[in-house]
Length: 127
Length: 99
Length: 305
Image (cartoon, rainbow over all chains, first blue to last red; front, side):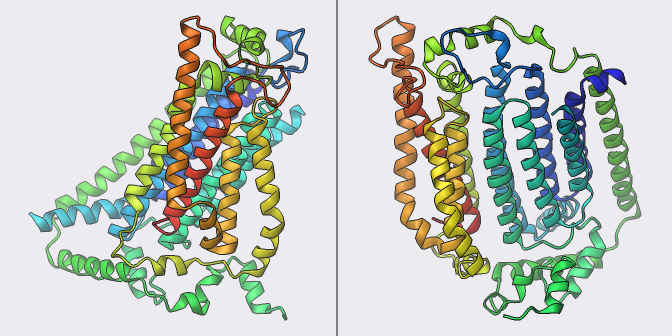
């Protein structure tokens, strides 16, 4: 417990990840699933960014170009990785949303159970 | 600053739970946009201003717009239908026919 | 205009969409939905006429319950495992072990090698520039997928889509957009051009500019934003920016890897024209991102440019 309180940022990130994951699993609505996926993403990014944070250090933007002191700056590598990740997550959101729109235009519902049921029935009709 | 960040993280967790529990999709999307905005502040506090700007523009702005346009396109701002049979009955009886 | 009390209280109590009752929206038919709805009802009736087997019904319920149980177990186990891992991590903010020689190299000699004051920009646009090129291509491919999935063909009538959410006559939106659009654009261009000196860069600046174009399109209609970005402009800009990025970075890597003398100099740190290739690459990435974001919005909203 003390360890969790010491690492509150990481713990919050993990909790966000798990909330997103359970949203993804338990909700039958496609849009809710997509939002859950986004929450999972942000939880993961929060974890990465908080691993790179160093207490008392500043943002990785050099203030003195002559003397560079390592202790003044946080770890820039997680920031660079997360920057890539955010943009990729937007692409994933756009693709999943457009797939959802297509599914809706075919089945007229967003509920995954209904979609399965209708798809199964239509298959039976065809064969 | 430490306390402020802890409070913001608690709000983040509360927002995530609210998104998961709300029935209305429009409310869920708007809470998600607020969630992204708080996330941007958290990133500023974690000394990563690059991420803060990107998250504010991309997470709160563009993802939110895409979700809202999708909602509007499928015109389903009402409820999150969980049950198969009742919903289809409701929908058949509804004059609006938009649910 | 007097305040309609009933409407206001309905709005306060989060009434269903107020816009759906407006006359220009009420009469617009939505042909595909009706057709498919009919088809579905027909289908459901036919299915209901058939005797439903007790076993299949039971098994469906059974699988549903099994799925729920497994999902609960999965979530609980994952939460416990991850939280116990977090508890064993070194204390937050004091993980100096995570600083290895890679980070040291980036911080200490990053300025000398890339010329960028912002170390993150130096990493993503110089050391890992091909990664960023791939990222731009991911965004571009996502747009292409959206285009394939949502594009409305020529013979299909798209006008009802357009009218369905037309907010271009809203006075409040227009007046507030009049003030905020220039600020959004200037801020986006600032963030884009100062990527190597201050926080920001191609992605954030491009996203801000794209959001500004979306705001313009919402407030003033498609004609205003269409004057800025048409389909042809979009294609040209995306192709030129991506091709320029690839060629410029290939040159930079070729000369660097073969120890040839490059004509691109890092320049004086802190000036706007410094950082070697970072500024032009930022501009290229920003153009691709803003066009892509506006294109996605357009595809979702109307189905064509």
